[in-house]
Image (cartoon, rainbow, N blue to C red):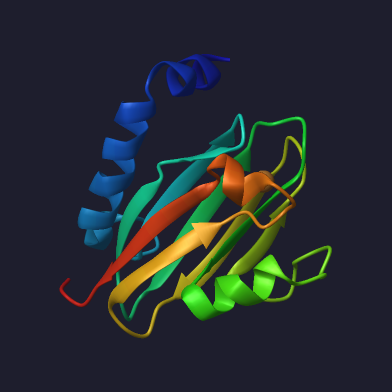
Length: 141
Ligand SMILES: [Cu+2]
């Protein structure tokens, strides 16, 4: 109950907390960054994330909506494939996650190279609505 109230009250605080977790990677329990992404009203929060390359990053994706969503991270070519794709469910690649209504999914991704990626929900109409975020992968620790 308390956690729900806290989360609802502080979208910005959540973003800062996620950034702090990334920056404080060495102090997390597993020794790797943990990033929490909330989905509500068909939006990703935060919509901008920075993570380090070369280490496993744990993403905890929480879908508070009453409808299903996806979280697919990658470059332009990957997103172009998904815009025209027909795969209904994603559960085999760590960079492609289906998050059913009201559920939380966790995935661990290691980004090999620095660069700018996007994370997008490719269910019909969701990207156009604004369900997209930017992931900056940095080479510095
Ligand atoms: Cu969606």
